[in-house]
Structure formats: structure tokens, C-alpha cells
Image 1 (cartoon, rainbow, N blue to C red):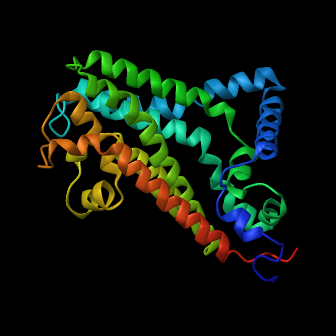
Image 2 (cartoon, helix red, strand yellow):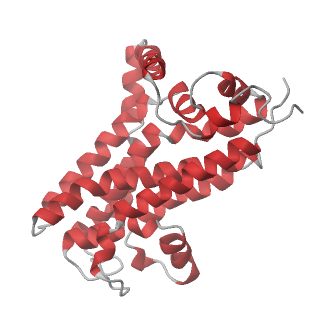
Length: 287
């Protein structure tokens, strides 16, 4: 195998996107425009993909509705309260999946050597990967997730204050940043273990499913690991408690619901660090 960083400046460029100069911004915009034109070229197929991609998010909501068809409460939460939880989760995950989800292709790029071509270009590696195959068809998921969240917030009879309005605006982007960070962190495992796709899916999609319900339905080490060890409790559960004005049945203080943006920033910083270390560890295929 070729030595790491065989192309000048590869590790530095790939390790962090940095602040792109004007030429770089034009290049990224060109990549995005090319993706949009190519995916929308066949309009009927594109519309069918848009409609079909709503299914995954719809299924999350339908599952909750089915559960409440046989019970009046879930983990101590009513249907309207649970919909706030699932709305925050669905909106955040769908947005992250749209913007960052195709980083899941990284194991294939590493295995086939396509990642070498990404590194030798005078652009940040991570933005290139995200724009190379941006799945615009998933836009419908993000729109539907936002619609579910808005419906849940309206129907939950929330006592709106300026603080809760600010939290309602900040929580969905924070959830998207958190999930996006998880996508990046799990993808970087492929720099060390190429066949890590199933492990990554267990964390990303498992995290989505975990955050779709009040964490009071889980127990023991499983809740401790996913909710607080990995931070998924701050995606939807704690922000929902703060919006609803409910005390945490598990005993955490009320300020925990307002910690979501801070947790998202920490997750993004860890993802950036994991990406830098992973790219520096990468060895070219030599092809």
C-alpha cells in the first residue's frame, strides 16, 4: 500500500473542511447544482422517489399510533405528548439523513479506492463526500417530519413562553446536528474496519428508533447507554419535557431540556475530531 498522505497536503485538506475560499464555494455550489440537475432530469422518476421516501418517516408515526390503539399511555406519556417526542426525532433525523446520510457510502469509497480521488482534489474531503450524491429525494422525509412536529406542537396544548418558542426553534436543528454527527462518527470506523456498515446502522438507525419514544419505556443498561452514554436522550426526550412543562420522571433537573443545543455542539466537535483522526489513519489503496 502507498504511504499515508502520498499527495501533498492530503491529510490537511481531508482532515477538516475549514473555511472555504470563494473558489471553493463556487466548486461546492457547482457540485450541488450538478446533483440537483441530474436527479431532477427524469421528473416522473424523481417525483415517485420523493413520494416513496416519505414512507420511512410515516412508518415511525404510524407505529406510535398503533401502540396507542391498545394503550392510553406509553411510559407515562399521552399520545399528544409522545407525538412531540416523535416529531422532534423524525424532523431531526430526516434532515440529517438528507444532508449527511450519504456519508454511509464511505466504506465503499475506502474499499474501492475512490476515496483517493476525493483526497487529491483541492477541496475538503467531507464536503465533497456529502455533495457527491446528495439524496434530494429524501427532501420529502424532512418536510413530512417538520409537518409532524408542527402538528404535535399545536395539538399538545403547550403553555408558550419566549423561552419555549426559542427551544422549539432550536431543538430540531440541534437534533439534526446531533444525528449528522453520529452519521460522521460511525462512518469513520470504516477507516479502521471496512466492513463496519452494520455496526454504523445499528447506532444511527437504532438511535432514530430509540429517540422516537419516551426513554421511560426503556430500562437498565440499555437506557443508560443510549440515553446518556451516547446522548440520545437530549435529541427529543428532554426537549419535549421542557416544551411540555413536565418534570422528568427519571429525576433529572428541568434545565436538561435546554441542553440539547450544547450537546449537539459537543457531538459535532467529537465528529470533527473523529474525522480528522480517521483521515490521517487512512492508507491509500495504491491504485
